[in-house]
Each structure stands twice: as structure tokens, then as C-alpha cells.
Image (cartoon, rainbow, N blue to C red; front, side, top):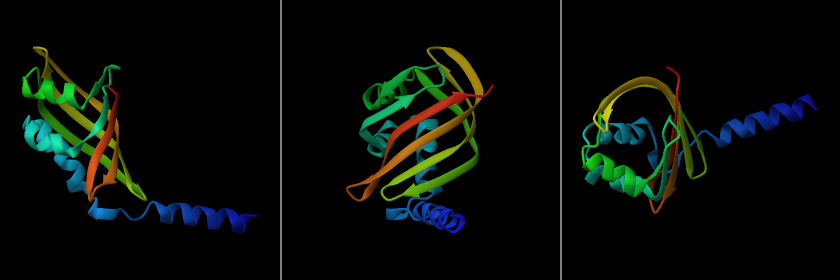
Length: 139
């Protein structure tokens, strides 16, 4: 039984090891870079049509509403610094987790905080598309 458990653990770990299409930190970093620049033209193609963003306050946005927010300058990100980033891959899915320090302005009000995040990327049509992003406030 112990040998079976070890074999299952090894196989499970191995299945998380390789990402198709060269997914790495730079793929995920583009998400942050384009948000800091409010560059909706370059950010849009990274997001799946079904993209869902769950904010730390419980608000949920889709691709259209989030890009509209950035384009209107209603939301401006002034700092995004990620730490403890881990990437796990399984077949055509990459799961990125970590901590982040962020600052910005939303609807004229400044905000800042430390958050935990989870992002889910899918490899479709020979490119990585961000399907979902979720953040939880730590402080």
C-alpha cells in the first residue's frame, strides 16, 4: 500500500510538471504589465472570451466590463508586485498562485493591500488564455 501511495504521488507530481506552448512566468507577468499600463489593446487578447475576474471584495467582472473599466481610467493600477509565485501545469491548464502587493485608484478612491491570488490559464488554439483570476485580501 505504501508503494502504491508513492507511485500515485510521483505520477501526480509528474503530471503537473510540463506546460505546452512554453508557459512560464513571463506569460503571467504580461497580465500584470498590461494592467499597470492600462493597455487594453494588448491585454484583451490574453483574456478568454469567458474570462471571469473575482475581486477581493466579492465583485465579479467579465472580460468586457474589466477592459472597459481599464480603458475608461475608472480603475488605475499603480503598483503590482508578486511574491511566492508558483506555477503548476496539467495538460492544457496552468494554475498560478502567489501573493501580491497592489495599489491603485478605483472610482476616484485610492486603495492598497496585500492579496493572495489564483489564476487559471488554458492553452487553446496555440496560445495561452487567462480564463479566471481570483484574489483574497490578506491585509
